[in-house]
Length: 164
Image (cartoon, rainbow, N blue to C red; front, side):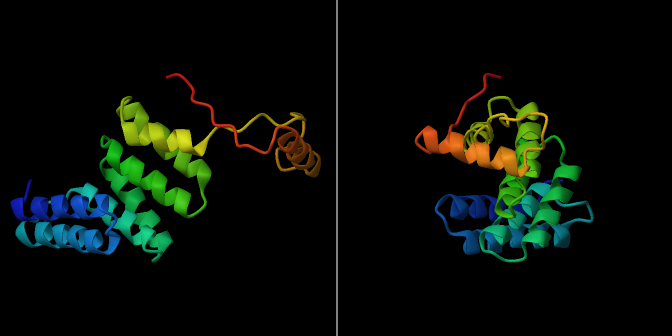
């Protein structure tokens, strides 16, 4: 069920987020959640919670709680690529690149043309294969060889865009 007042707050939050006002956006997303809960007994749109979690993480608040909020939103609105975008962004902020990559890929599975998801994946880059594939990536030998390979190639990070 759509609650007009909650949707207006949500739209104002998106506008604030686009201008970089994360604190203001967080207040609007929280208001959207409250307005929806006050108006109806139905479960609020989890996109409100997802964006609230993103703002919470950006403001360096409780990132674990922000991650939990975004994961709940992704579980509930598994058809919405934007909640996976937010989940991936929060995962990157917490240092969990694997979860971020999984969330971005899951969002792209839902919407192959989603620009922000494609951009996030491109920014993450693609790792090169370890030089000694029979050893773990984290082994001392692979790490040293990777540093040596990187220093011989000018130290630039290689970002490869894979065709979809």
